[in-house]
Amino acid sequence: AQSVAQPEDQVNVAEGNPLTVKCTYSVSGNPYLFWYVQYPNRGLQFLLKYITGDNLVKGSYGFEAEFNKSQTSFHLKKPSALVSASAVNFCAVRDGGGFKTIFGAGTRLFVKA
Amino acid sequence: ETGVTQTPRHLVMGMTNKKSLKCEQHLGHNAMYWYKQSAKKPLELMFVYSLEERVENNSVPSRFSPECPNSSHLFLHLHTLQPEDSALYLCASSQDSQGMTYEQYFGPGTRLTVT
Image (tube, rainbow over all chains, first blue to last red; front, side, top):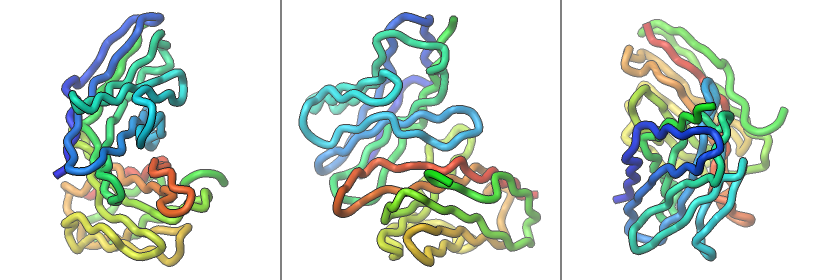
């Protein structure tokens, strides 16, 4: 069965500092991995994905994520945090060609000016 | 209109009412989804339609009834709901055949309150 774990309810970081939001996953087949962001009173917005290829993927708003197969992780990173990045970030995994996508519980990112 | 739109944005209904949520996608996608987002819980997949056929039904109570008349429209019909059904209901779409992208594009959601 698929599962996603986001071990941190909240990540606090000062503006300009690097940030990492953690995600680990479990699937039986090839993992398709995603990060989404949700701003208040909005739906989720797609940030980036890993399907195959280079383990480091780059996405919207300067975010990137690194796929680590041995550690079954897909952590979200940003070299320099902005206050505007404060939101809830969701990691998600899809088991290969299936339609079912499992979302993590979300991590609230708070960037302090 | 662009992206994925949902109406209404807010809905308050009694337990004996019947109402419908509407979703429309303007992206040319061929798969559509309903999710339930409750406070302090992960996003719950309810239904998936691919090419207008239901391909996932995630043990959702029968008081929720989906309808997908074409690849651009998705409805969620609601009747005799319970207070615990109060949540944000999100619609999403994706392209899942030729030109596959897999990522989902979400609407803004309908905030449902059952009284």
